[in-house]
Length: 108
Image 1 (spheres, rainbow, N blue to C red):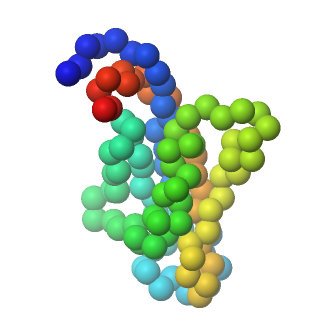
Image 2 (cartoon, one colour; image 1 turned 30 degrees about the horizontal axis):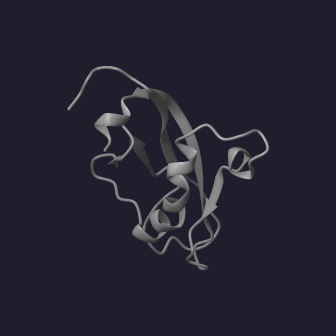
């Protein structure tokens, strides 16, 4: 049920491969990315992929980064996350790309 009213705001996020200092085992390249929009819609550009293990490394932080955090919260400042594969040494940058008004009743 959509009422049209908004009672909250969430950030849409972009997670981009920032650096690869080792061998790209999964086939990703610097600049590859995915976006999280509308609270839970994961978008990957056509013809591209994003490694499930790199996704798993950043996934626990996405819900928190969608919300405003206090100025003293370490997660408000931190934007870099690492893939767990030690041969890749792949770093991802998590950015807030837009603020989206939403209706919490539409999400539950």
